[in-house]
Image (cartoon, rainbow, N blue to C red; front, side, top):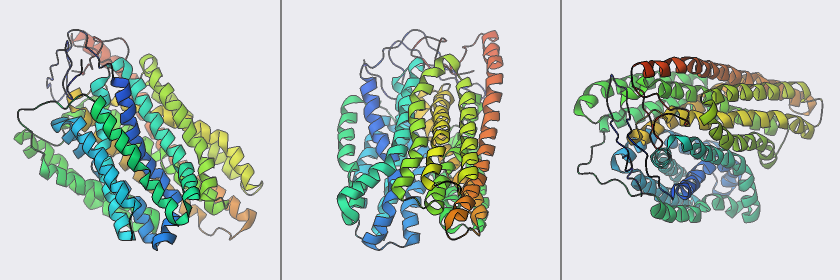
Length: 536
C-alpha cells in the first residue's frame, strides 16, 4: 500500500503538536511500507545525479566552450556561477512547494524543466543563450533536489533512512568523481566543437528515462481540498538575501576582489528582514515560507550549523587542489580530474557505509568522520608543502593520493549522517522544506568556503616564479596555506558535533522522565517502526 506524500501511512497515528515551536510525532502501531520504495529511490537518485554532474562536468568543458562560441573569461565564469547561484537560491521555496503541492508533482516538473534547459544549453548558439540556459538549469535543479530528501523521509522508516541517505551521498561522490573524467572522454569523442555540447545533451535521454520511471514508481501526490498560498513576500526576501550572500562569494572566484565582501552587509540586512517577516506577518497569516519553530529542534538547528561549517571546509579544498595541480604543476584538466578523483572516490565509498553505521553509532559517526577528514586534509597539506618542487609533478600526485582518499572517506562520512540525523526529528509532512533549508545552508557554506580558501591561496601564491621547481614549491606552500582554513572550519564543525553527542543523552533522558517519546534519531530501537519520533 502506497502512502500519500506528507501524510502517514495506514496504521500510523500522526499528531503534529506544537509545544513552544517543537514537534511531536506520535505513533500507535506499525506502518505499511511501499514495496517499491527502493526502485523509487534509485530513479530519484538518477535524477539527482545529473543535476550534480553538471556542477563538475562543466569545468572540463570551459576551454572548448570558449573556442567554439567565442565566450570570454567573464562569460565563462558566469556559465559556472550562474548555475551555482540559481541552484542555491530556490531549494527552500522548492521544498515548500513540494510539501504543499505534492513532492512527486514538483519532482516531475523539476526533471522535465532540467531536461528542456539542458537541451537549450546544448544547442546554445551564443554565450548569452548559454548563460541563460545554465541559470534556468540551476533553478530546475534547485526545485528537484529538496523533493528527493522529502521523498526519502516519506517512503522510508527511521531504521532505513541512513541507508537511503547513504545512496544519495554516494551519488554526490560519484558525480563529483565522474564529472571531470566523463567530460574529458565525451569531449575527446565529440571533438572540441561538438563534444562540450554532448556534455549537456547527455542529460536529455537520462532525464526522460528518470521522468518516466518516477511517474510510474513514486506514490501519487496527496489530494488537497485547499492549496496553501505561497508566501510571496517571504520568498522574495529570501531570494534576494541568499543571492546577496552567494553572489560576492561566487564572483570572487573570477575577480579576486576583497571589496565584494561588503555586498554581504545589505544581504544580511535582507535576511534579518526575512526572519522578522516570517516570525510576524507571515506567521499570523498562517502560511509562512519556513516554520522557524524548526530551529527549536536542537538536532535540526545543529545540523544546519554543522552543514554550513563543514561545507566551508569540504568544497573549497578541491578548488585549490585544481589550481595547485594545473597552474602550479602544469597538469591538464583531465590529469587534474584524475588526481582529484581519489578525494571523490573516498566520499563515494564512505557515504553508504556511514549511512549503515547511523543506527549503531548515531552522532558519533559525525565526530569520527570529521576527525578523519581533518587528518586527511592536514596530510595533503604537509605532502604538498614538503615534496612539491623536489620531485616530479607525477610523483607529487602519487604521494598525495592516500591523503586525498582519506579526506574523501571522512568527508563522505559526514554528509550522509548529518542529513539523516538533522531531519530525523522533523515532521515528515514538512520534510522537503526542512531538506531545502539544509541544502541552502550547504550551498552557502560551499560558496563562502570556496571564497575564503581561494582568497588565502591567491594571497599566498602572489609573486610565484614563472616556471620550474621554484614555482611548484611556491604553489605547494600556497595550497597548504589554503588548507589551513579548511582545517579551521573542520575544527569548528567538530565542536558542534561533540557538543551534540554530549547533550543528546541528557535530552533523551529528559524526554523519558517527562513521559514523552524518546527521539529515535539514530534510526535504531525507539518508537514503533515506520515512525519518525519528534522531540517534544
